[in-house]
Length: 82
Image (tube, rainbow, N blue to C red):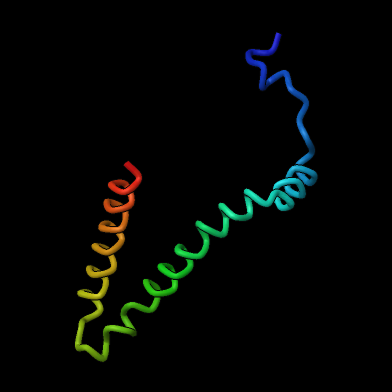
């Protein structure tokens, strides 16, 4: 006997599962809603040192600014989700 109902269900192949997922409009909207802000933040944090160099901010200080902005974003995200 299978341990659960889900374990007893028939599974799709890996390829057909990916195709079904990529043709699901709701999944694509959720992926887009996650990808756009993550891409913007990732792009800016990757060049933060170069952006702050003309303002005479050291590489170490730019690293700490990036660190605290990520921590602040996590805390703010959890607070808003609550």
